[in-house]
Amino acid sequence: MKLISKLSPSMMCADIGKIAETVRLFEEEGIEYLHIDVMDGVFVPNYTLGTDFCRRLRRMSSVPLDIHLMITEPEKKIGWFDIRPGEYVSVHAEATAHLSRALREIRAAGGRPMAALNPATPLSALDYVLDEIDAVLIMTVNPGFAGQKLIPSTLGKIADCRRFLDERGRGDIEIEADGNVSFENARLMREAGANLFVAGSSSVFAPGDLRENIRKTRSGI
Ligand code: DX5
Ligand code: ZN
Image (cartoon, rainbow, N blue to C red):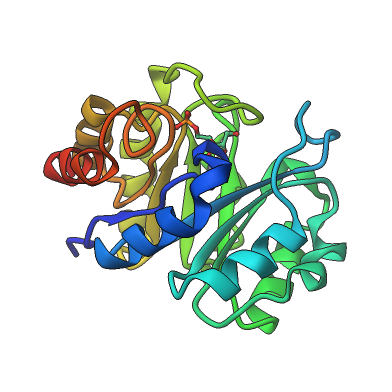
């Protein structure tokens, strides 16, 4: 099953003073998702976007959110985000003792559950949640900051993940690559088997014209 490539620009990399203009341009360009990095300063050593940002962004844009929860005990906090039907919500397998409960909470809230794995976390963390997810988020950098460099082993991990899913009859489960999705890395990630791309500071939000950056990113995937 060949999954369609989709862009999910990382909004923590956006120019905060031009958010309204940026999301309007994204709508015109058919951007599929808006990636919202939520960090609690505990699971990762940083704070970024939060619940109010999600609410305000929904009022400004029709593009569905792709909310990346880098927070501990996410199963207790899904309700804080007013999840809308069709939104992706990813939770980290490393952030909770209750990954299944967190994924079920997302589904019950009308969202599309996504299991997120840090670079060192083996794919076996997915063994018993395949029937509870629509996608897997493969971190290609260690989470917490934009502007980092791709961890080379994660390209192989994307390919291993695609094979892992296909061998279990789950060719329908999407793979999102998140971290240093540059113009060049995006192509390598697509070839490895990813179809969702968190485009941040090294592609869509790289210096230069936004529309041109979107075109260059899409040409590689
Ligand atoms: C990092 C976040 C990423 C980040 C991507 O923890 O999950 O979404 O914003 O930024 P770049 O593309 O600069 O790596
Ligand atoms: Zn992210």
